[in-house]
Every structure is written in structure tokens, then in C-alpha cells.
Length: 344
Image (cartoon, rainbow, N blue to C red; front, top):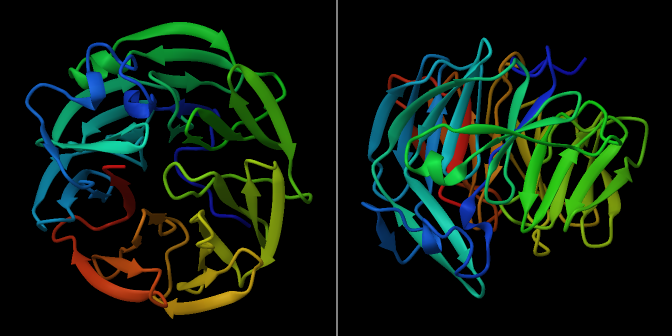
């Protein structure tokens, strides 16, 4: 039986949190051009940060200098859109600005950093999950009704909402969402719904099992999902699935760019597979993972991260070097029950 993620069960609502930096031209986001916000610093490289949370507090850890700052964050689940972090509990989403983000701009990116800050909270029904798409934040409930959160206002620390259109009716029981460029991808009961340029395409699953989460290296065009006892990878370009075997898969991330797939098993072992499902490496990481609070697996362009709640550490993995453990990031007084990465 798949462990129930605490904030998914009651009403399946998708909070698709957007990054206004998703546009490829200067017109995307007139108020915050090129992703710049007053008081921020533009840097030459991505400013990745980890946010770990224990249900009551969250620690924002800078991966470049190792500094950390702690905030109140009551949460049964923690998710991010690459900058903002949403902690959900009892029908309320508490929003934390992690203070690092990337603005894709054609053939290059802009990278920004500022101090992390807690922005407050807003009421949302139980069942909220977070993905990323477009220039606004969208909250989609089980009936397809959409609420839009103004992204420019959110970047100024204000939570402003308005009613919007309904999502495509072919998506029954939405339960996970990610953004890849200008595509919104949602895990539905009968398949993965891909929305692009106003067109909807429901891609059926390759078997009888459905996806609950979609794992990707940010902005990659390949997605991985755990489908029962298998892992499946969706190539969004061809709308084709590739399935592979992996022992008791718990979480999976497609790295894209011919880098393969990372799979974390219920035995606490991280495994790396190529695109054909051939195992390239494996690395035992966790002893007796707590399936009530399943560990997270996230990846960026060079590293992967797995939270180890029992040891109060986050393992940083160099997936290009036989899953070498690059370092153990101590989380101090905040037990890392939840983990997300920002700055992408």
C-alpha cells in the first residue's frame, strides 16, 4: 500500500505555483523585468538553496556558503515553485520566500538572491500540491475550478487571488504537477495531462497503475513517475513512456539530457539507470526510511539531494560520479522530514 502523503487525501487540489521568470523575452513580467526585484543581487551562477522542515519550522540552507536561517512553518507537506515555498496544514498554506531564483532568458539565464522571508499565509482546502507554470500561481480544485494568485503581487509580499477558467475535464483526480518551459503537466487518474499553447493532450499511462508525483530535473522535458512496482519515464516531446524495473521504488527523478533516471527505493538505496533501464550505479543512503514521511529525492543540473530525517542530514549526491556522496549537510535543530530545493 502506498503511504499517504499527509496533505493530499481530502480534496485533491493542485496549487500550480508559477515563476514569472518563465518567459523568454523582455515582455514577460513588466513589473519585474528579467526576474529582477528591488533589493536583490544578480549573481553569475545559480543560487541554489535547500529548505528543510520538521512540521513546525523550516531552515533555509544556502548551498554556496552553508549559512542557514530558521522560520516558523507549520506544515504537513512542503513544496516549491523554485523560489516560493508553500507549507500546507489544516487548510492553510504558509508562504516562505526562499530568496533565490533563476530567470531563463533565451540562450542564457539570470540568477538572483536576496534574504529569505516569511510572507504569511492564505486559506486553501486540504489536498494542496505545488507545481510551476506561466506567470501566475494557479490553485486547481478537484472539480477543475481555478483560482489565480497574482505573481507580481506575490513577489512584492502580497497574496492576491481571483477566479479563473476551469481546467480540462479529461483530468480526473489531479494529484501532481510540474512545469517544463511553457508546458503544464499534471498527473491525472487516467494519464498525464500536458497543456501547451491552450491545447490539452492526455497521455495514457503505460499500465494499470497511475502516477501520484512527477519527478524532473527542473525544466527538463523528461518526467519520471513511480507506477506501482515500476518506474516509468515520459518523453514529453514524443509523448512516449519507457518503463523500467527497480526494487520497491519510492521516488524517481528523470534527469533529462541523456543523463538517465535516479530512483530511491524503500530500502533506502539510491540507484542510477540509463535511458534504457540499465543500472549504472547504486548507493545505500538511508537506514529504515520512515514511510509515513517518505524521504524526498530532488535534483538540479549537477547534484541530487535526499533528506535523512533519522540522522538530521541531507545527503548531497554527485550523480555523474557513480552516486558519490559529495557531502552531508547538517540540518541542526530542524529535523528534515520535508525537503525542497530552490534557486532554479
